[in-house]
Length: 103
Image (cartoon, rainbow, N blue to C red; front, side, top):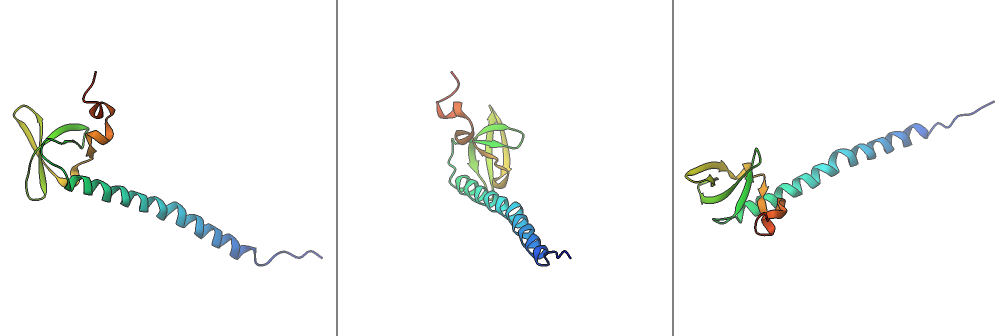
């Protein structure tokens, strides 16, 4: 007569739940950490810093308003964008910006 293990099903579900936790919650924590770091950098911006806004547009900070930043993207062209719309800082994302421009 054959006997089968009865407790194996519980171990499977615990293992599945642990895997689901890792897959779902761990990336969310790292994403939140990146967002907090970016907001700290955005709050520390000064006039003249280069930023990247949605669409890959690179501009220079020209001024500040309540919860927005004026970004100069060309001569006589300024955009007002929310601080939360800043995708990143050019010096962090572009190697040419760190070297003082393209050569």
